[in-house]
Image (cartoon, rainbow, N blue to C red; front, side):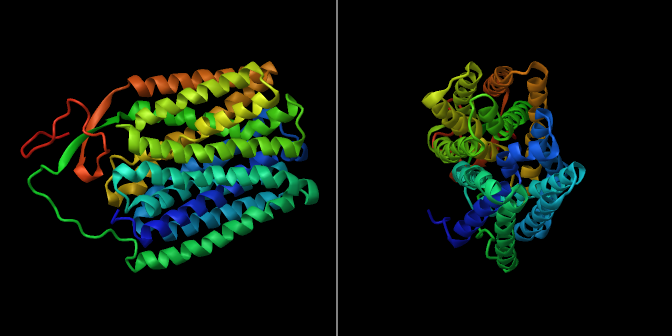
Length: 422
């Protein structure tokens, strides 16, 4: 693979670290949910609103952050976004009141929203389209890695020295990542991350048509799946404490297992999507099947050793899909507009996180029932996957080197000179 050069590896490594540290700092709050609930007297709805608040800030900046990334460079944009996360969560860590705590979480979310466009550019701008799902899945595995570490460490640290002091660990790691992003910005300004010049074909025979779903099924799937994913991250520890009788540290380990399985899932689904499926959408539909099975098992109230298997299945499928979706929303984008494409696509993911977890929390408070919550999540995933499976598809034209191994699809002709537009 001649394109696999040092800038590609460096960009991917930095992107993975940035996603891990920013998630450790923001969504790691889910691991501290029992402590935060006691400190600020939060209802289940309000606990579910914490990740929603993070992504409400992210939603507000996702589109302009994508444009900013394309304009000033991914390295500088990443340093700015990570600094914003550190400032916001730092404020939350010292906040004496609920209002100031929530303000800090929202500010951290604004920084978090700018991380994805910058890391998408750094990790895939030099990667051919047919390999992007795997590379983006590696990058997005940073989200699950950050959650895994948060679940495994933050509750124990909080038990020892308090939840406020526990947040100093992820903030410190985040600031280290800011320094590396500034190094990347300098190398980027020197042209280190620029793509090598490619010969331009004029006969049209180097192009093929490939299939992508239309905007509505893609948006709905992202909206629902991201909302369910963050509901699992936000509610799992409380569910395990309240319903299964777990201690807080053991519940944190349960969340850590879900994120560990999600980390493996992201790599596995990304590799499968690039190697075995003719479209990223097909991979997402398949992964949703496992998500449905896991959520149904939670709704049935399984316990004991089976519960740990179910937690792993839910993590593998309900958390593991994200990298493939990132590849899907960048399929239409040219190299110079990867940041903008990511910013637009993330709007629907962030909307789902803002809306779905609080709604499921409201269901929990209204019916006093976790099976109702997991059943509602199951129905939502079935609807999203079905729409993506049967929704309209469009054809886009890409170079043959960018196409998947199994493309073009059966019955889809090679594009020749003089053919109509896609």
